[in-house]
Length: 446
Image 1 (cartoon, rainbow, N blue to C red):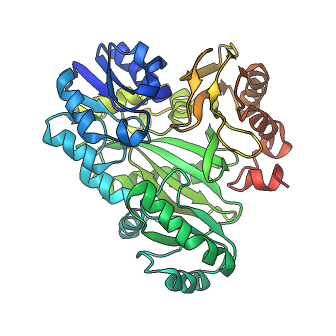
Image 2 (cartoon, rainbow, N blue to C red):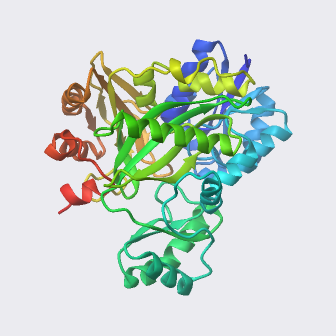
């Protein structure tokens, strides 16, 4: 086992990784910016290292500084968490050059799947269905207009190296595309260093279903069932659940087997997620692959009883998977909600100081929380401050527990999206399982 591990991240995911490392007897080194000096992950780690100023470009995205810190701390592994450098192939390559184990797949695989156009090509080669669209980058607005006309509106304009909804926009007609193209291209270049764009068909009322997979270096692979991530705002997930509602066992198996096929076709090793869109006819299409731990991984842990961070570390150490597909059981139903420091109507961030925080207590409620009373929520980072996960014997029980827990969740001093989450969970459409990617627009933003 590794002796010491550096967590190249912050907030609740850093705390989550620290918790597993403590169980495994692995020492932890946290990193933090000047804005995070009082953060909970800094206090929870065995040691903490200041790496720079508040802006992510001067701290959490500073590869040279993080590698230098890892060497000074004497770690033998780095866990990148999610976001930030987790899908940065250059960072994974630097770790390899410095003989520090990167808890994740190889730099080559990260690079291939991080380029969404190349990922589409790889899946087509593996004969995994992909959303109809372009398999080459768009040369400019003129080609984008011709392509959209061929595919048929509405379409999704996407950044090839994008993520988190950045550089992505729903386009319903030619005028929308003319207005959106250059702005999205520039935004993608600013955020990801590459403005390459492509177009996919927009699937109306589609469900966003993702499959959690684990693969080792020896060709062994399992899928850990699915998560439904259809409830989104601005193309970002806010509610995830497992198993997916209204999905039959035959489709569940088809998706799982397709995900394993996809992962093995590219030589993947570690934890990853294959994301699909499922249309109203129950046809499914590859959307993208996340070569890292997902924000919503706790719902999978709750229904399988597995610790995904532990499994990541186990695989990164060079071990084979300790179980087979037949060993992966499914128990109960879990739902996760993301708590954002934002205005629930405009979705604008709401930084400030939390004056009071009261988390609901229940044996079937799990909190992944990065803040406490007195914490200052700064404008420098993603506004997600916590996640709450509930588990029930079935979906109805999980919804009842979640409804009660949301009503007891108190955050003062800043605005949060809790009122929006309550509206969603209490809606009859959600309770019946009728979720899809434009759920909020259709049911709550009329």
